[in-house]
Length: 211
Image (cartoon, rainbow, N blue to C red; front, side, top):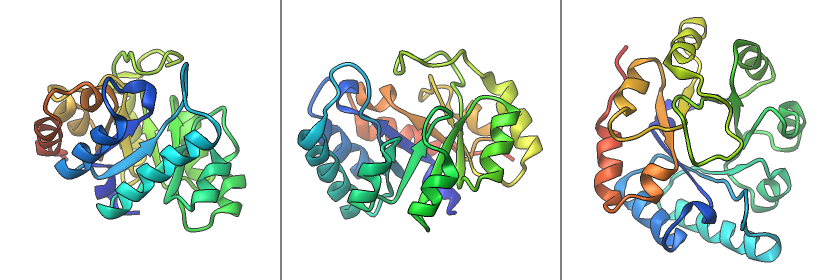
């Protein structure tokens, strides 16, 4: 897998936005995000045909900018839309099951401890999302912060495996996450709530991983 797609990995659902979500996505794509994950979960989330229509609009936009379009958890929709990949949590469908249904797709897995990390790799994940690194408000069911210590430990244990950090990441601490071993940063609020998305993405892109 191309590590560069993890550089600035934007996650969004309509409930995360204070203005038109498609406008936010377009601005983020124009600014240079490297991957987009649609995560339509939580109170007030779109469902049914409206959800599918929104997903298709996001996918079309990502395609225009040649940015991978990932769907969170929803295997059925990911297969129906022929999305570039799917991101699953520990409570979601088994990774191996999805792999059989969608050969060649990108599969990301959320991990919170070394056992989950090992299992994700053995099961054929293309990358893992480690977090929450810091306390986050974007996920109501978020686990306690894993911190940079766990990220550093996993990087040492799995020196070449693609890792993206997630949870509470801002323009100010993104470089710290990269220097602790992440190949990229995954963000929600910092872009969704930004008053200048172009500058925010630029600032996130400017932070480089230090080996």
